[in-house]
Length: 125
Image (cartoon, rainbow, N blue to C red; front, side, top):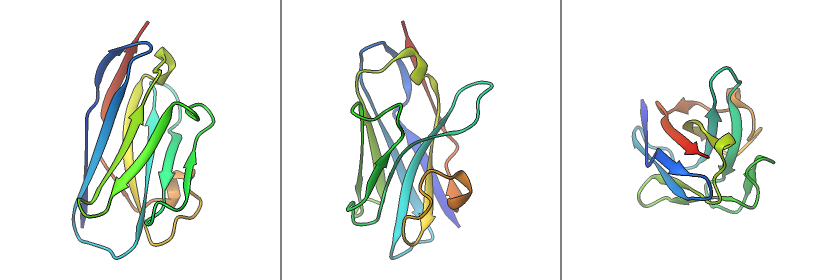
């Protein structure tokens, strides 16, 4: 079994920054992709960003391009998302997810095998 634990969420003013972390533990894999999604109240879970094992492939959702940066440290089994120029519409619960093997269908929730519990990000105007 794999456990994913997100951290770094909180309350920030519009224009501010936050960095979320997601640490993976438990069963290990030699190759896995990681993604970030978010879900606001009453809305569907939305793709934020994804990164392949080698970080050679990185993708972003249209709403966060140019503001968010995903990265990973495989030695620490941790993935990060640096969120800059935050907007009130970025308010959501942010989830990290793990996809065993190559990064495929990176924006689809059903392509991921494991999920964290989520961390709340609130951006005030």
